[in-house]
Length: 471
Image (cartoon, rainbow, N blue to C red; front, side, top):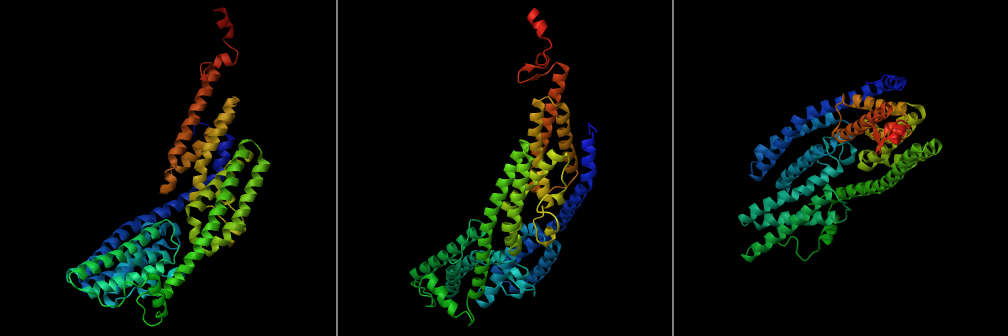
């Protein structure tokens, strides 16, 4: 550190332990990722190979491959544990692939759609949201992806003029599409995959038409004139009698996802309010209106308790959506800035968020990633404050701002930061450079040789004016 002040010493004393704890958390996450990377690559290759062998008719090869893949999936899930963030993305994609491959295997042997209660999906621990290997979204993603495999399979069968096999693929997708029409898929991965189901169904119908042109007709299992919704309703009546598609199970998934969407809307609205209160609290802190800033943060905390917490307790995965993380990051920044201005210190993570014992009972604790994100954004507010102090020529205040930012930068560069936070580090470095330049300019002004806004420092202090007049 270029300066050693009481401010920096107090910050170091209070926050070093907090930073060390977060570094340990980030390092543990990195260790998990290093363990998962080779396992996930192997699992993806193995599932892709099993799918290839199923298309090639080598059931005796694909079976053992899938059995081994299920064991590896259990290993992956054991490493991930309850870490919802780690499970999102590529791990969920692998589980989609697992469901799709197993569903294709199941269709080839039974002519039916794999139910979510299949033991390979539940692992004997319940299915869907009850702790099985796959979640509802992953199951749906897998069975929607099955439409691509059924299209390939149907083309292969159509090449052999096996119209009955093509009709079975068409029948399954007709009933599945009819049920999926009842879902409200929002823009995202499931919405795009559902488009694949519609494309697959259309391809089946085209294949059957093209076969009919050459005189090969399908059995009359599903007359083309019957709408998809009527077919699905008819199949619902037969659901207890060995259905082609497990409509009752799909209805349960639809109801759970509908509840999830309702609570997501509540969460998004609450997050907007929290973010607005936090931004206004930062603005009030800049104006030294600490009372109003505290009132706004109290309002934000009330929103967390009354609006966010009930929905997050019912649907924990909502806690790590972008809207919640952004709101918590903004709130953390507001709390950090207020405490820094009022008390001249950095608040530790436990002080931010809803706080207290309520955190253990389902309250809104700020995660290490959110805290660090708020801390990086704080350096921008510190920079704005430093400019205001520089305008008043308060050199000591500017140096304190620089020391604070340098302390934060020094702690964070020692950490293995997650990708989303690491992207913000460039902004922190920019803020640090601006403060260093500001301090340099003030030093020049003090020496009578600098310029601020085009005005020479010496003239600003009244020095050198006499010489100018004499000239």
